[in-house]
Length: 118
Image: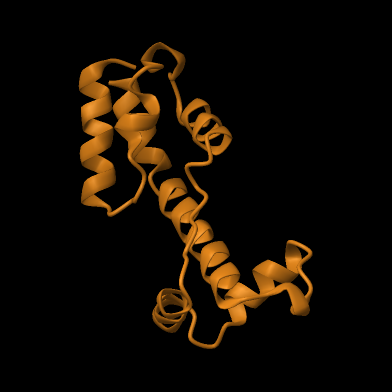
């Protein structure tokens, strides 16, 4: 990857509201990224998909806007092995936000590969 490709990725992420500072994560490692998978693996290793939502009110607002029934977030935490007594609105919101961010990144796979191949 070169600087121009990195700038195109930054623009792509900004345009699609993907809240990952791709420049921050990749700028010092440009030569190591030639495809979507290499970027995805590196971002995962660096914790770029981990979202921490703190404060009860922020978590409740996020859940109300993104999973008012709590069905999706509860299914996710159960799949991850959480028990009901260990849950909080912050945990539910953080796991849901992380999943939404990861999904928004994967939705750009074709565009990212196109940028890297041109």
